[in-house]
Length: 242
Image (cartoon, rainbow, N blue to C red; front, side, top):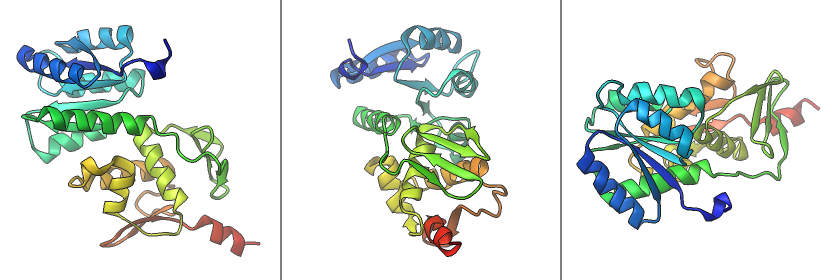
């Protein structure tokens, strides 16, 4: 069976059996194939055996907490991960995102909210972007191959997570134009994230840390205070140099 014709596989990692049962019921009704793990070690075994399309990962678990398991998952691949947390504290959310989580959902959550977030993350992961531009040479240092989804700094490939690449794609496609936080959220993350402006700030920082010579003095991704961000107008700069 081709991957495109099968159901998306979701691995649920949580030691609360009652909650897992509810999640399984709702996700199966929404057309997903669900697998379970009750601790970190079991989660890694299932990850290798099942090869899920997305992992729902509880933060608070015995033995290995969710953050530790997330680090282990990121050491072996880029499988999308949504953190499940009973804490609404900003620090916990930021920590998960900084460790490589794609999203988080705070307990208690509605089945509709969870399904919506899962579909949004899967949609971002399947993003193909615009390949007609081919290779974009921003300057002597930065090159982007949109057809192959590759980014190079000084001819060395820089690995970007799917959301980072999607954000970079949108910024470069609109080089020279100022994009507001709301515009970026809607285009890169989706309508489900209209009240999550910190995602934009975090991922702009991630990109700057990977692309800029000096992230504190960016030359590619520029801040327009009180409005949003813009990617340097490299085409205009190149024309000036001719």
